[in-house]
Length: 387
Ligand code: SF4
Image: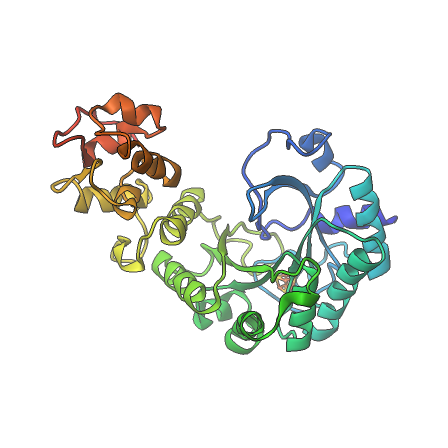
């Protein structure tokens, strides 16, 4: 098996690693080849980077050998599945060749656990070091931090990567125990997340490859063990406040044969979608956790966008006047995003906004917004829409 076969074998089996993926099949503007064709050859996904750039990202693993027994995972120990490993040298060389051929413009590197978290982390770091130092790799690297990694390893990973991440899997210790009984929520997973933040606060990034500390994120597996949306979002908020993660990924559970969860139903795509909508309200739309509406089971309404649910409770009787509302108030109106809210503020410096057509020209989805706004003291006409 050559190195590219190994990359394909590991990378095409990473269904739970959703970091940076975007749900879109169109060709990347930065990629000279059709990604659908490429994907059939290599595990390249279309990815949106933290800076908004869209690139073909190579997703692969250092090894698919794993000594852990996470109940949902195709790589869990003892499961009969083909496995392979790549040395740091061969993986770095292959990434360099794929990059120079224009087939990938970034690397997402994870690994099964082989020989403990510390040894596994050493191999991931070695691959990134060879790429940066020997091949002068200038592209994006997202490096996984392994459960149980030590602080000097976390520091070195942060000096080499553009993003680092630790998969919490569950929102709390109880959920994690049901998903991955031999991982420790606090010491092995939250511990390294805390190290990342400590390093940001105490160390200078002057030895980092681009003299900046990388962003950090985490991932949860949703829908296998009964965790609620409230649990997931509450933990997300705490991680954001304490450890400044920039992103949480909610990876929907899908059963894998010959695992303890093989007979469980797959998680709902709508649930995943609503979680992401709620996450963006918390991160980008100035919403508080307490403003999200959950049902008695702690879950979001699957039928409606959580922003619409909030607006129907809070804005229906007290609509927002677009000529006087501040940025935060505008952001809370369904149909108004950050760009259109800024356009409204700018337009107001030139005069009063008097009609719905002016808002439409700014990109506001008035079919959604009209029910919750006043324009110069008047409610605009609106027709109920299916949302
Ligand atoms: S640690 Fe768990 S999730 Fe990661 S590869 Fe091993 S079994 Fe899969």
